[in-house]
Image (cartoon, rainbow, N blue to C red; front, top):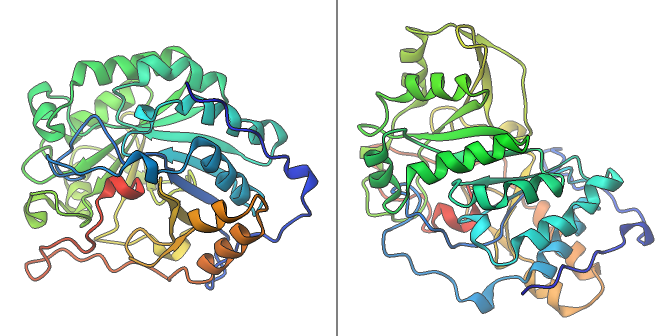
Length: 347
């Protein structure tokens, strides 16, 4: 059984300067992939026969806590744990418990996670107890057979049960759906009505060219500009100025009263306001989801009990954050833009 990570007392440290990139964007949002493992094999995220990292390569829960705390001391206000599937990481609730202290002090505004929902029934109450107020659940279809085909291994009923459990304990749920041509494009209107009918926002996401997943990217790619046009024939989509700290741009659906988000890295990138960096479970920091440049934080983390080298590495990395990504999908660019899978950085 994992011992709880030992809290780091930030009050004893001298105040540190907030992290600001070369384009004057304050870094206030950290996404942390706590594991590359998952109990699904979604067709746009993983290959069916994935090779996962040796467990020895992963940061311990204590090390994850230490890195997250370092970022929080530098102005990160929102922390999202992802995977793979974060809830399959052994002992993960001890990390949520430890990080929740930053919520109590006010240093952190939000602690949240993105999940496939398969383990949510088991952990919903604990997440709520540790200060998590909302969760994102990835769900691309409400057809059980199609769900099994998209996830390769998933059970839709179990995911719906997880959503039920989350709402029962008072967690706010948002549904994330990847728009997939020829797979769920005829279901999106129904998914919207179902989500809003349960009081859940829905965010649609364009497929991203990350990793070789054994599928042709061009065959999967469905532009959200096309999806939005089709939805506009049936619903009234009113622009609203709603932000959750991430890349989605939202509209209000007049007929349902709910919010609909669009994440469009391909048709209209969201880079100009990017306030995010991403840490992998091995301690590699990616300053941009769509670029290969990365920084090793594991080495300075393990080199000393002091965090000076860690902070220096973080500062040097943020100073290299690019203006934007270079995602392209067309007939000339059908291979992945980057070799790493989406599960490595957690989306």
